[in-house]
Figure 1 (cartoon, rainbow, N blue to C red):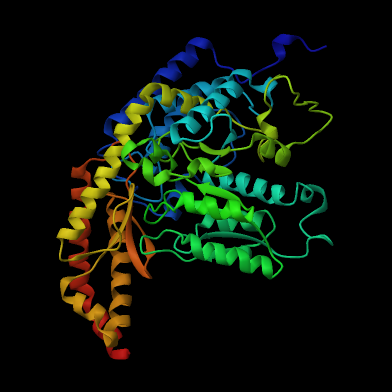
Figure 2: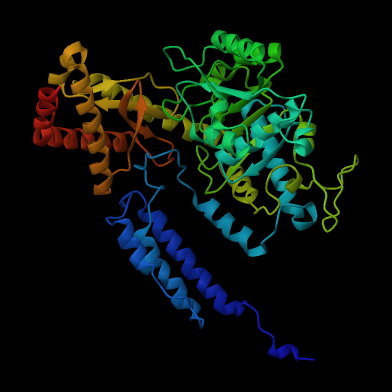
Length: 514
């Protein structure tokens, strides 16, 4: 037998590890100290970054101090900084110091939260967080649920459960098509939204993206429940099988909230699963002044919300809640001899790996649990209000400007608008010149955001609203202030004026060609 002394491990000497830990915390503290001023994006290109990390496979180990130093020398200088108060891209929360510490602690014990025995405290903390989130948004606290990697997996978990429920869970074994089920499974979402995660989920669960029905919206970008009802009836008459309606609770482009109560009525009348995609905006229900817009949320069969978005929990931390825990359990239950876990009537520990698609699951809940305990609901109300106030401030700047155009009223924290030079406004309304001018303005708005990102001053992206290329700001950082909005707005204007002055000839050439 080989003596124990000849066996090795990956453990460091405790004193050595402590020193490494102090250095790592110093690096983190330095980052948080400068995050308001750091460039949002590095001045580099994908090939340049790839070259920085083009290392050969390490055959011999390095000193851990040298490995840790790589953070300062190579990783951090090539990082994007979603924690900046001027990061407005996508929908990305800005993270918190206590969340970063929680992630480090969770990694140190390395619990796998698939089975209760793999993570007793982690499982119970996750279950408590699910109840807290439900209570925060006015959802039944006896609901089911699970934390996920993000909104797409949360939507996948919910919509897959909706599909299985519609087939009385028989499709788990028989598949989607049988002699009794020959029609097309269909699901429904707002025509304005067409969120990419729903399309991806439809492809992943096998119904296909062509199964998605786009329901027309009103002037406020909210789904029309009357048209939804007509579409459901028509699909049934055509032999199809409606199985899920996705209602948006804070849409990705304009933060619109669909009429949840009316949609719930339609879904109840047609016995169709209602899924509320609140990845971006569901937590806004904690604001008393917004509460009326969330009426009906508690009636949804499932709700998604991403704590790593508007609650600023570090990545990754998504969430899905189920009004009926039994439906969730039936959709994802499984058995394997080597696991040998059985949920019994008497509580013997929840196996969360049997409540969603992931069997191996990290301890996501600790950073959420610590963040909620640290700030509390009242603390988060203040932070969410600040974001809404910044969006309203941006709206006021757009309305007061003669070189920007409003495309929406402010809803929550996402706001879209466009740069439109004053001398082109009349041409937009002129039928003969309309297409050429709008194509130029679309190109101009894209160039503005592209060039602003390259400066590192702010990270702004575009989207499509009312068939226009729009500048879109997602203002969900707890660090953003009105001065950050003003600074970004003026930078957009400066880039717009310069690019328009340099490239107006492009419009004249396009118009001449037409």
